[in-house]
Length: 312
Image 1 (cartoon, helix red, strand yellow):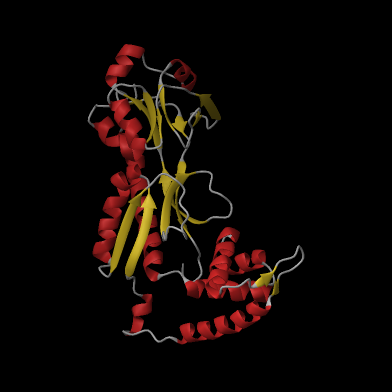
Image 2 (cartoon, rainbow, N blue to C red):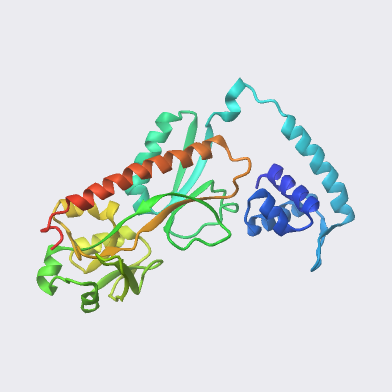
């Protein structure tokens, strides 16, 4: 962990008198403040705070450590940066995590263009569908497609993710084509483990919301597994439009339920703190927001371009 940040967190806790107040001041989650304090105590080799239900107070070791942390930050804040404006130049390694489907469809290209634009940066891109601990796993940025972010997370919405219900022509020929969401109950629906496993949500042409229970013989924690299964005729899938669009265009999948729009998801960038954000991370967030804005416009054009045959 970053000991400079841990020292800054400890000083803020001491000055504000509580970890909640420190989290608000630093614009961090409470969990991250707690982890930084634990790191500081491990580094000091002693308990630094007396904890009570009313207020925190410093131990003897905490008094000594507080003075040392303040001196350390004075040195850090006074550190001159070589090469003039290098402090504001995006540079260094960014560790980024996201799902395999998002990386394959959008992020790989976005990162490639980012690296051309900022040649002094590097990116370590890790594929994962689980919610990672950013501090413990030393992740700078996690991308998630969701509408249910935990309230203590620090996140920026970078774009939106449209979805489409789709199936292979062979499946529809064998099982029939659903014309309304409630007809999905009679079909084998391929479901995503972490989202909408048993309930798919739509809005109709009048803007009314409806939820439809679905079930099937295959669920997975990765969109691409379900997409491949749908392509092979195993069932009906609810897929991000960015993943399904090439197969729909090629006639390998058919978009279904044209009068009903699956719920739109947000694409979020999650990071540890807005304070002292590295220029490379700030540049990446701005870059991805612009990139996904362009992707959203392309997604809308694709939806308009789908023919009645596509939406059979």
